[in-house]
Image (tube, rainbow, N blue to C red; front, side):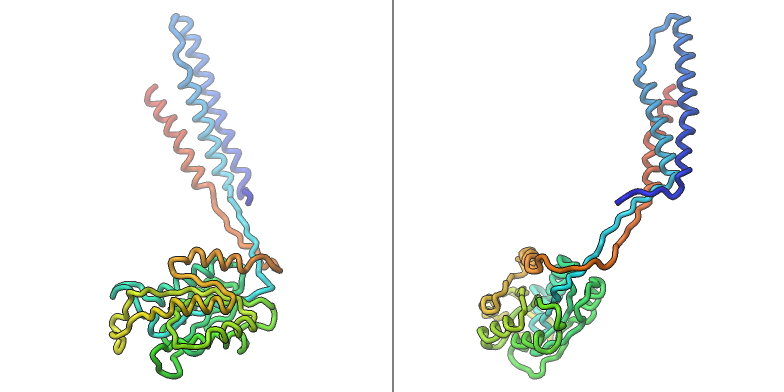
Length: 319
């Protein structure tokens, strides 16, 4: 961070301050002589000193503004080269459940949480996919957070992809096996991070087997349970009888244990973000580009100059 001057010669305007300062000094000398002749007491000189300081400050601020200073800040963006990640969002109909007809659905809350989790690892390439009983990729791992946000908003939705068959629970967590086996992650780098946001309402499956597969595929997972036991699906045809599946609480915790992963509830989102940051840790990286920003200081200096100028006018009116 440093300051550069666009018109350095403009700073010479501050020298004009010497004219009113000289006039003030001359005026004070003449006033002192008159007081001596008339035998008058010397008044309090603090106001005169304050006036001189105000004139000097106004001149310096105006001169600094005329030089057009610009505050330049630069941040070097880096890319982690030893790890990639995917955020996987549940797109089954149970994700329509909400606490009230006008409340945020699980899907909406999952999108928000996914965006927050993405923001804590800006140097990490992150992809985006959704799943029901199969996985649909929407975005392959990228550093571009704006593209991630746009894809999350416009592409991740209910039944994207649609389930291949209708069952009591369309969510099939066995679909997570597709991530490591079907080329979602490149062959290099070696490390693979997976963040799953779901209500984990699924038909019975072998948690032990899935956990072993995820470990074998080197998927370092974080599970976020987007769920509440009081939620209902409002306005959906055929969904009026829906009730939250309390077994999902045990499902997510057992799967996390089997996969040597971490699981969190919605209320623990901050802890999930810290866990993701720690999971990423330190590793090989490379600089990409420098992000620069500039702030013009002249308008702020001009505004600041109004303060001493206002005092000068006030003092003039008193005189």
